[in-house]
Length: 340
Image 1 (tube, helix red, strand yellow):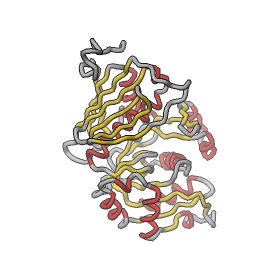
Image 2 (tube, one colour; image 1 turned 60 degrees about the vertical axis):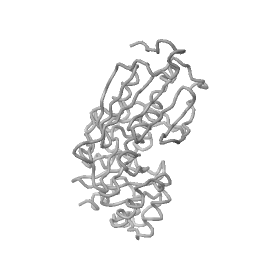
Image 3 (cartoon, rainbow, N blue to C red; image 1 turned 135 degrees about the horizontal axis):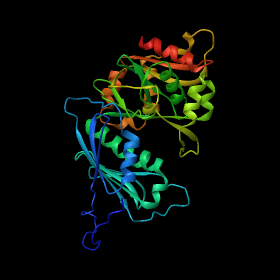
Image 4 (cartoon, rainbow, N blue to C red; image 1 turned 30 degrees about the vertical axis):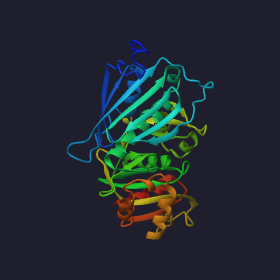
């Protein structure tokens, strides 16, 4: 489809009559999102991110959201292949993420609407459009409108019970999540989790697992290794390259419903003292340690409206520090023991 522009920029300076005839829908993060656009490539990115996911819901009538995706004829001032970093702004009930004058996202949680604008030359960077503009709008609307706590964490589990895995980037959340999946556990999300503060039900977007090449050294099945290495490679802002493994196309399980968080596990780089025994991998945390680690690891969530309720409910469940063993499977055994 060709780009459809407003009929007369002078008579329509805000692009209010911009034609956006294309539509798609996604059930994700507890809500129903309607996307409208003038660009098939942008709608394809929506499907890449959210298609075929289990329809997580927190209530019988999930909230409705509407996001407009506009591809403009403007050419952004990109410096070669370098994508400008996102800058965040707020005011008058609006939350904004801007890369430059032609690539930005604006959302209104109270109106449950969003606008994502993308320049034509930005289409060379589909990962950044999807992850930093489209997913930014979806996550922000879902969390703010439903008063969910947004965490930098992974969530895995089974039997409707979930474990929050918390650690900084590079701590091993994705590698551990992979080995949990290989042992028939379920994934909610590997890096961004939304939790209802009063019920501790956790949701996320479990479409992808992002794995570095060195994390595959622990795989014992050549078939798993080959399948992962066929996945596309994305480059993070840090410059680190990772395989983007689509879990919807494989043998692993995405959680069918939100999982109730029953324990919090902080990942440590420290190795267990007795490698032949699984028990030292998990060190129970006192309530004061949990609260301290939680607040230090989640600076964004601390300032969200539901944080006080979330922290109070979370302090009533088990918390652990997980140290490293000889193989990720040892950690999986320890985590399965918590759930079972």
